[in-house]
Image 1 (cartoon, rainbow, N blue to C red):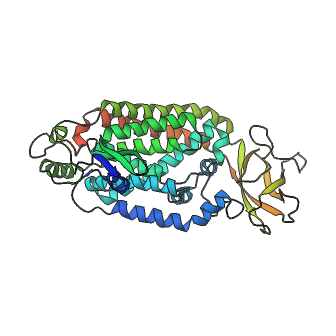
Image 2: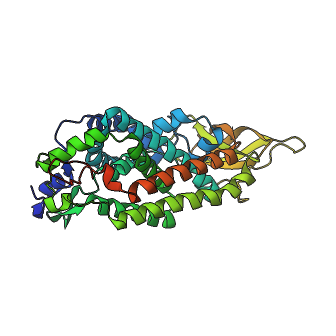
Image 3: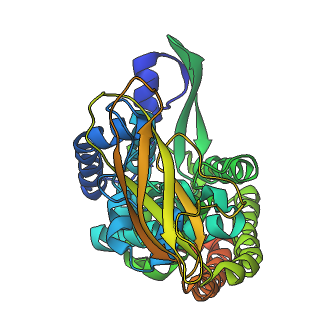
Length: 423
C-alpha cells in the first residue's frame, strides 16, 4: 500500500491512521483509547458545566488548576484524573489519533508494561513542569485547568521517534471531498510538530505546551533506558523480509539511519527552551514561595434560574491586625472579576478565607447564595522548581545523547544487513 495519490475523504481518513507498523496485535493503545473515550462521555456533564451550558461552570472532579497543583504538593490523584479528562471532542480526537499511530509500535519494542510506564511518567512529569512554568512565567494563567492525555501521549511520541524515525506516515491535504495523500518520514513529521509547539509557546498561554515538550523529552530518554535490543533485532528481521503492517518503507530508506538533522535540531531546541523557561522561573518562584495562598472557589448555590451567571459581591478574610471585610486583590492589584467563571486569586499569607457572597448579574433574578472557598498554601514552590530543573537537565541531556549519538542503535527502521542486525 503506497498511501499516495488523490483519495475521497473516507479513504483519506483511513490513510491518515496508517503508518509503518510491525506485525502482531498490540492492545495497550486500543485499551487506552477506549478508557479515554469512555471517560470523556462520563465527563460530558463536566464539559458542559465548564462551558456554562448547564449553568455555572465548576470542576466537580477537582481536576486541579496548575497553580493549585504546584502549591498543594500532593495532587498526584488529581493529575492522573486530569489525564483522562478532555476539553472537547476535537481535543479528544486529536489525542487519540496520535495515540493510535504511535502506541502499538512502541509496545511492539518494549511491551505493554514499559509502554505504560512511559505513558504515566510523561503525563505526571509534563503536568509538574507545566504547573511550575505557568506560575513562574504568568500568574494570570494559574486559573487554567490541566486536562487531557497530551503529555502522556507525547512521551510515547518521543519513544516512537527513537524507535521508528524512518517510519512512513500518511498525510492528506484537501477540502471536504477529495484529498491528496502523501508519505512523510516520521522524524521530519514530529520535528515539525515540535516546531509547532514552540511557536504556540510564544503566542499562547492557554495551551499546556511545556507539558507536551516535557513529556516528549522524557519519552526519548526512557526509550533509550527501556529499549529491548533483542526485540529490536527481531523487528528489523521482519522489516528486512518485508513483513509488516500498513505503509511500506523503501528498501533504500531502510538501509540508512533515519533520524534527520532537522529532528535533532528541534529536540535540542525543545530541551533548551524547557531549561531556560524553568531557570528563568526560579526567581519568580522564590518571590512567591511561602508568601501567598491560592484561593480555589466552587459554587455552592441553589440554581433557581438555569443558565444565569452570578457575580461575586464580596469576599472577606481575616488577617491579624487587619479589619475584616477587605476586598481580596489578585497579584496585579486588580479586583476580582465581576462575572464568576471559576475564579482564583492570590491573597497574602496569613489570611484565612471564609465565604464569598454572590448575587445574580441580572437584577430580576432572586437567586443568591454563598461560595465555598478552598485555600492552598503556596509553599515549597522554589524547592519544587529546583528539583524539576535538575530532572529536566538530566532528562534533556539523555534525550540529546539518544538522538545525536548513534541513534541508529535503537532504530527499528534501519537494517544494516539482510539479517536485520543492529547498526
